[in-house]
Length: 323
Image 1: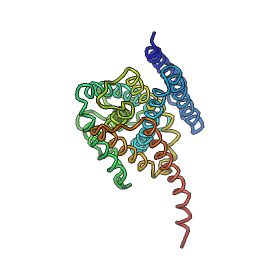
Image 2: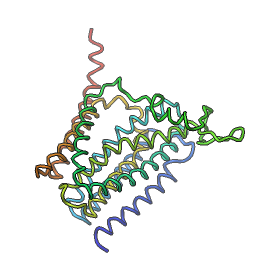
Image 3: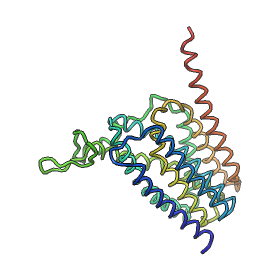
């Protein structure tokens, strides 16, 4: 077997074991996930990702490992943005803590399936029409600009979303207490509970976020638009996406009480999206940015935005107390 084939096989085995852990140990039905448990689970998923990165380093070389680490950090930061929207959805529909973990798991599994499909489509399109990366570049610059200047009052409202209106119009919904059920039969008719609505919304929201994350990670991994994807590049794109998604559920419970503690994280993500968009566009002039520079930019922007958020939150109470 070639090193690349060994890497693919290892990724498949690790993914299978991870899903077994998530289904069997981390997501028992009607269980409540404490902050302590969420912390240990988050550490577990991060350590698995780091271990896979180390494996890639020894099996495929430092460049492939660096690509994975860079893509994973980017996907992880975007997934944190996802989580804040997920928290809004669960809060808006008043989902009980005992039902949250399993609903999250189903939504995340659907997200993994959709990511695999969209990545395959995206790679196919880029392989055939490499100029599409320039369109993605413009889209990322625009998205980053809008995200940077996004105001708090523009916060997503799940109950006023087009998706929720669509579900109410075309599906038979019930407001009965779900008690862990996604479908309820009443008077010979099938009704979808609020838990089903939440799962649909989680999957749909992840599809929207995938429009940003997939072009971003593709640009990070593929350093030249005119060079075909290597098997290693494809592996890194899939694995970084899936490893970032696998830790979402634990991260949800860890960040649930810290929604307002990272006020400036979106600005850090926005700067990175603009950087990646510009990176795509300047390839038209045969200018290529190294993966190591991309990694440095991502680490600096995300670290700075998190540290400034912490500093700002510590400073705010003192400002409020001043006459």
